Length: 57
Image (cartoon, rainbow, N blue to C red; front, top):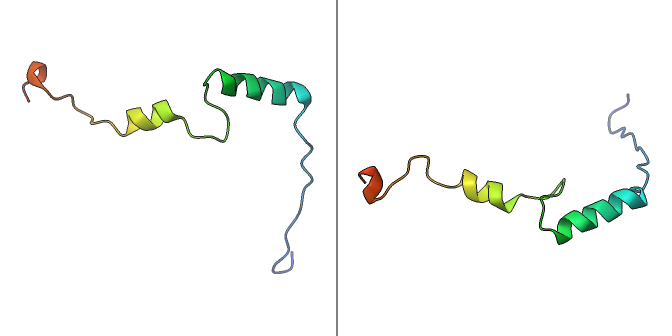
C-alpha cells in the first residue's frame, strides 16, 4: 500500500434492539461496552493488602 493510504470501512448503525438494550442497561446502572466501569476502577485503585485494627496495621 502507498504511504498515507487509509482504508475506510463503513460501519452500519447498531440495530434498534441493540440500542434499546444499551439504553436499558444504562438505566439500570450496568457497565456498557466502550465505557469505564466505576466499580472496577474503584476496586483496581484500592490497596492490595487490608489495613486497620483487625489486620494488625
